[in-house]
Image 1: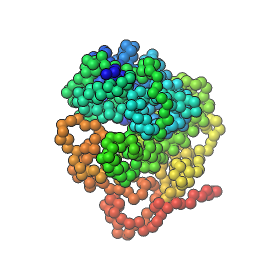
Image 2: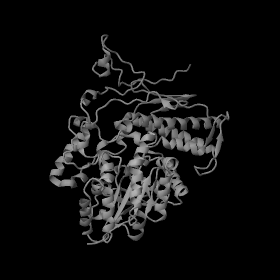
Image 3: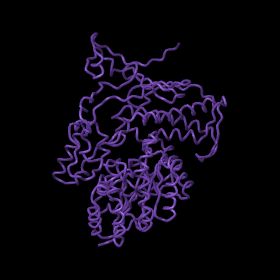
Image 4: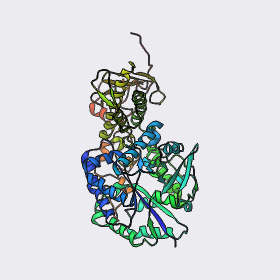
Length: 560
């Protein structure tokens, strides 16, 4: 039996725009009790990541947590990871924003904790083959992803017990495979079960490494986990078991392990996230086919079937939700404006208080505020949907628009001082095959498309709101499970990914499953029967007498 090295890499994050009471609840149920429990077990080492907006919130509302983390770092017990400051999916950003967000996070950690991180957390572990370049340019040496990424690249199970190196045009980073077995076991299976798995790995010989890379909210915020982890003592029992078996289990960090051991080899990972993300990114019919095919393959290959079948990639959410695609393409448009405006600023450090006075001297714009407003609009949560609300949560979508519109307003104010007077863009601005026109004048931004001749955004920069920020009612794969029960007969605490959690949580939900026949927008031309009823209109139970909805309109410039 050889020694097992165990990295527990815990990621904590709350979306930009989330309610303060939600953050307080997460702090009381997960973030604080976890730190307290860790402090009681001095033999253990862990890796922690907090998104930048959560760290800022902790510093303002709970400085005692910052003190606890600082003490653990100074004791050599915690490695803190960098990452995109506002937890963006990095591959969805312009490269400048990717690198700058990571560097800003690293600088913030150094200023706050007196510690310079060398590793990073990759939001939603969304990887694309070109990413080593921007990660390396940001000063990062290593990061965890999922063992699923490696399995898709053909790496066998034995070679998952260590780390690999990868590169893009000579820019190299080290990648650690996060164990799906541990992700589903901790903290949901009995501690004895987890320890048995670690014992099994120890029999493989060498210096095997297992990495858990998962959300900190599973230790108190996810359903039933607060009682399970703290009142019922799961976390205390697990930490105690690790200490009691320290003769053959050594908890370590990414930094320590990669300094002590060579990589297993090179790897070139395909575009991927964790396995469930690929399923969520599929359209409903595709997701149901995927689930059926996976169950069939499991009958032949067991759990190995998971690496034979893959779903979509994270970018598929832009095709699945046109509303997400629109926010994303507007973010790219506003990013271009912001970086054009930044040419009027001096200095490189984002946190520097370089001030740009506008033409009217009514607004003092700092480089720091301009960039951070843009970056807040890049927070990933409202761009997609899986188990949690995501894009379906209006307060998270409105938060993206609020910060992006504020960044756009400030950038335009700076550009006016640079004699840029007109903010009208034409072309296929949201990359969906239809021409668009975006007009930004004074307080108002209006976005028109040839598709159905629709107005899909009407925003007030002063109020920082898009009044057309609505979501089309559309089917989801889990709607087909709506009649299934979520009764848990086993008495075990289940992971949120368990299918039993996806059934109906209350009766009568079938009555609310109403779908739109078209994307919701304004200026749509409907032709109805003269006797149409409002209740039929609401339930999409009517016929269109024209073919204007879904047809392309001609966009013409009229010289007035």
